[in-house]
Length: 112
Length: 116
Image 1 (tube, rainbow over the protein chains, first blue to last red):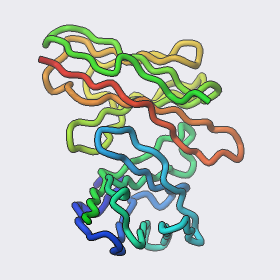
Image 2 (image 1 turned 30 degrees about the vertical axis):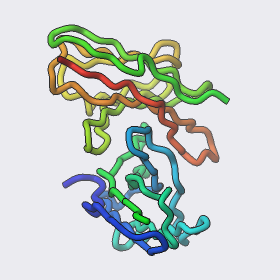
Image 3 (image 1 turned 180 degrees about the vertical axis):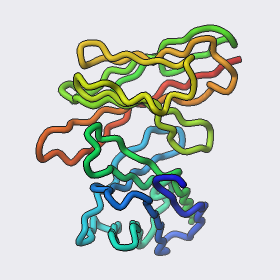
Image 4 (image 1 turned 60 degrees about the horizontal axis):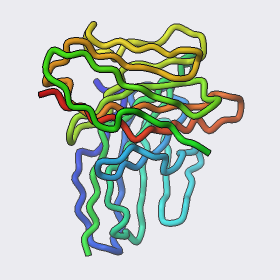
């Protein structure tokens, strides 16, 4: 079983739509969680961290459910510029080497 | 400030040749990672360096792949006797692991390797 599993996608939504991505992780000792964004033929970049209490950054909301080992990303009022691949990332607690585990990514296309 | 840089940006080589890919991490970042990404695929972890600790080489796909990090800064990924299946974008990333850090990992622009 992979460390991090994501919705297979792709998601194709119209501008203004609300879309949600899900991610599950297998290691209950996981400590830190992030969403990265990767544009076509570009390197991944940090979108936002995911905190236990949930956090919001403008149109983006991230949620963490430790009991279910589940992370989500909600995008409201989608823009054309949101089209990208969204990567779920997990870091294990107690990992002295701090390796990050990446999901395969969920592709989003927002159409006009 | 300067981000992670990689060179070359593109590399075309013939099957069987050796290649070296270079990564310059962000100054002061103690952790350095190599990944590869094939077209339309996710990130595949290759190797991770953290300070003076022994690197985590668990992701290297074969003994044709090796990496070094000199002086705790610049890293070189070497692929010997390249095969067509080695064609991919090779991404390097660095991260600061000081107290209070957000553990954000910064990626370089990648080296696109094509093996003919």
